[in-house]
Length: 59
Picture 1 (cartoon, helix red, strand yellow):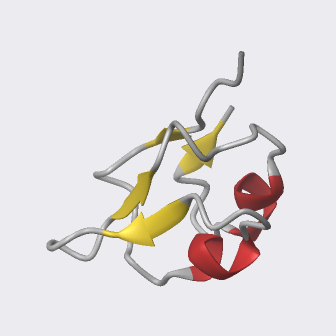
Picture 2 (tube, helix red, strand yellow; picture 1 turned 120 degrees about the vertical axis):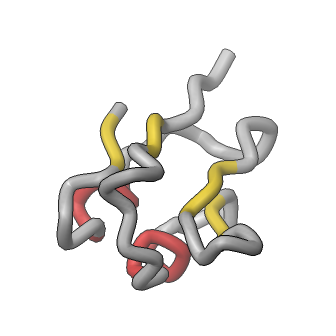
C-alpha cells in the first residue's frame, strides 16, 4: 500500500516544481493554484519533496 505525500497548502506557493518532479504524474495544481496529490497514483518515492523550494511537501 502506498502513502501519498503531505502537502502544506498554506506553505505552497503554487510554483508547480513538484508537478514536473513527479515521475508518475501524481501531482497537479488545483483551482487555487495549490499542489494536490492523487493518492491512487502516488508511489511515495519522495521526488517531489526535494523539488519544492519552500518545503511544503513531506512524507
